[in-house]
Each structure stands twice: as C-alpha cells, then as structure tokens.
Length: 120
Image (cartoon, rainbow, N blue to C red):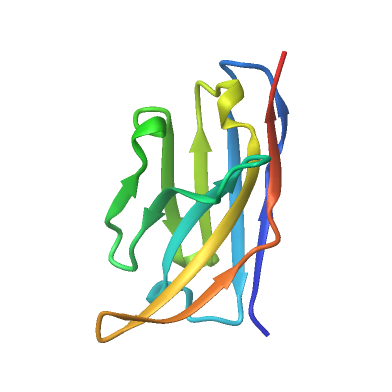
C-alpha cells in the first residue's frame, strides 16, 4: 500500500532550523508532484511548498527565502529545509503526493504529519 512517512519535526527556538523528510513507498515517486502543507491549531491546512515531477518549485509568500523544498527521486524522498523559524511556523506539517493524468488530479496521498514547534 501507499505510505508517506514524515520525520524531522520537533521543538526548536526562534531563528533555528529543521529539515523535514518524507519517504514515499508504493508509488512511482518520480511521477508525482510532492508538497508540504501545514495546519496550525484553529486554522485551515495551507500549502507551504511544492515541487513538481519535473522539479519546478513554488512556495507560499510567508516562507519565501526561509524554506526550501527539494526531492531525491533515487531515495523516494522529499525534503523541506526550514531556516529562520518563527513562532508562527508552529504547526503540524504534512507531506502530500499528487499524480496528474492529462493535467487533471488523479490520485492524492497524505502522510500522517509531524509536529513542528517554534518556541523559546
């Protein structure tokens, strides 16, 4: 079956860094667009950053210049490097995989989430 397993979350002080990893199994990883979403208490889940199967990247304005997404198709892994972390980055971070067929979203999977807490 399909699994997306996140790791790397934790407690970090403001200004610190974390790197999240998401290992995928059960899918042809290189064919999927990958993304990181986050959900803070009382807020809706939001897209943080994404990377297409072709390697094109995008991120939400609030993390530009601080967060970077990358992927290693040989390891079936997508990463989120988070620098200069702020308390408002505190959330559960979710890995997401999307497969498009003829430009239409065909299949989507989610990981279980990893908690990131930014606090002094």
